[in-house]
Image (cartoon, rainbow, N blue to C red; front, side, top):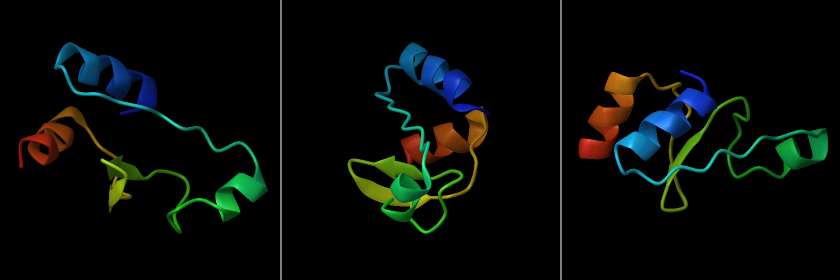
Length: 63
């Protein structure tokens, strides 16, 4: 699930979503997570680096 799909899906379900694209080595080195290809944060807290599909994301959101 790419960030565009996740953003659209989140919006349809009333879930706030913000994607941040890392475009430089310096930005990646200063990222708040060691894995910069994909990271999920909630309320500023790191949750996982596992890429989400709709079922995984919904399970995470619903606790």
